[in-house]
Structure formats: structure tokens, C-alpha cells
Amino acid sequence: MRRSSLMLLLAGCIALPAALSMADSDKPYTLQDLQALDQRKAWNELIPHLMDVPPSQRSKEWDTLAEHACIQPGQIDPDLAQACLHPLQGVLAAQPDNKDFAWKAGKWARVNLASWTAVPFFAKAVSGPKDARCRDKDIRLALDSAKDQVPASNPELADQIKALQSACAIQ
Image (cartoon, rainbow, N blue to C red; front, side, top):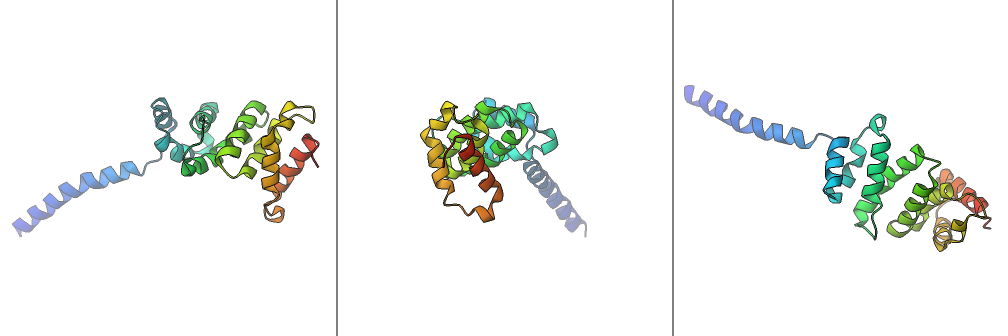
């Protein structure tokens, strides 16, 4: 009996650190964790964890971090690009009047995701038909791509298409 108790105690001593290590790896990343990854340019680790920060803790710093991590020059890995869409939409919702951000995010989405995903960003980025951005070819490409989407299944996208067409006086 004494030997079996010793074996059980030894097994527990081995299993406990492993269990604690696994529990730590399941913890969501904090804003401070993400900022440290941003400083190291560790995009592959940072981007999938952007949404770990709860909405109530997403501040201007989080918005800046999401923009910096996701909107990098050139194309990024398709899985990372897809992981950026929701955070960038969150930044757009938090800063609906930030036309420069909306434009950068729209240009990025047009290149790195399905072209139609740029429509909501472009719709917030343009001021009206005289806005020089309305003549950018990416707006036409995004709208052409959006026509292939089923508006009935995505009424919000349908509204954004209409808003962009109206703002740029596009038929």
C-alpha cells in the first residue's frame, strides 16, 4: 500500500505542472500581450488573438494595434487576412468617421480578401461624387464583385452597396 501511495503521489507531481502549463496556454491574450507581439512584429501569433480582448476593453490602443497588425504593405497569408476582417470591421464600427482608416482598410481588403469585402470600408471612406477616391478602380472592382453576392441573404451589404453607389454617383 505504501508503494502504491508513493507512485500515486509521484504521478500527481508529474501531472500537475503539465496541467498548469496547458491551462496557461488556454488563457486569452491581453492587450499588453498583443502590444508586445506588435513590437516584435510577430503577426502570425498576434493576428489570431486580436479578438481575445473583450469588446469592453477595446480602446483606441486596440484599434491602432489591429490596424497596424493587419494593414501591412503587400499581401499577407490568406488565413491571417481572414482573421483580420472582423477586427478591422470592429475598428470601422468604433471609428465610423475615420475616412482615412476606412480607405486604407478598403484598399487592403480589396487586395487580400474577396473584393466585395471592401465595400463597407469604401462606403465609409468617400464623401460624395466629387471625392477623388470615387474614381479609384478598386471601388468599381469591389462593387462588381459585390453584385455576385446575394443581397437577400446579406441586407447590410446590400445597403452598403447602395450607399457607395449613391456616394460616388455610380449606376
